Image (cartoon, rainbow, N blue to C red; front, top):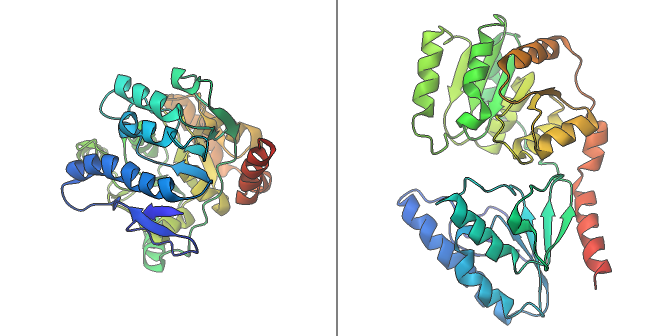
Length: 335
């Protein structure tokens, strides 16, 4: 396993060869440098290793047109697989057309593409080389909760229902709609927790909205990167997880996989996305028409008095054991 130099994992066979992926300075320059350094550094290792299966996970898409041809020289020696955690990259920098071009080049070398539940109808997924395999996302097991933060949140809510919006803070997650809905439910609290996205004004806008609605006592924002222990505390303290994203959302949610083991109630956007199809299949959330505040209010009202979801069937389906077995069995049968 080849990881960034700052990775915490220390398992057998782990090599930390790739560039640091959380720089503190010159982030834009580091991002561009990493796009060139990582593919070359990995290639030097691939070039001298024996025949193997190489799985690319969140690798350097934007520079694919520069390095794919190097890996194609060894296409008969290795089997290439890409994990498409977020397969709809239309808004990936620097533009939609360049993103599409880079994805076309990246997928031209792949033997397999692993996706979760739903693969968007994009032209770059149609080529003669890549075979696509639907695999469960897998459950992220978070550590024990940060006791200080958990106690602080429980003290703040005083036993009242807490709605949680977790992860990168961006407008796509409809936080403004959530704040508006809190005014409709006087006994509820809202927590927005995560690192702000590149939308530089979003925190200022949310705080202005909270002040105007006089919700300082019931809406809290933690606008920074959370540790896994802090994420666990936020989920533990909450009653309902807000996954009511906008119509722009097209993928499966990593947050969904993080909260599954906590068996919380969910409010989910019923759009053209993998998360909605999973929720519908396993009946683990209240589905809402995207960007429909009136329907969100009705579904939220139902959730506040409803019983917890039954997560048992989904947890069995989404186990990492099933994920790995599907991949290994497919690759083995292709030999």
